[in-house]
Image (cartoon, rainbow, N blue to C red; front, side, top):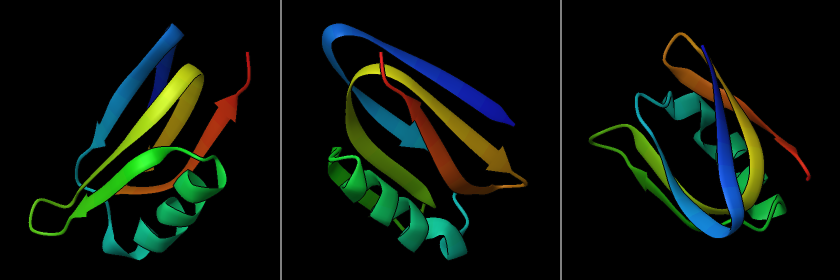
Length: 75
């Protein structure tokens, strides 16, 4: 599954991803930190990840209930 998010200029978005596989959490956390996104939260009981992203296009790739990679295209 592939999700593309376009955050309008001069805006921020709260991205909430469900059914995130526990094995992908550290990789996702590292990426969110590297991209300087903020407010990263992992809700273990719900297997949900949330973070805040600035304007631009973000591509999110899911594979069978796991999220292991996000690619950002700078505008």
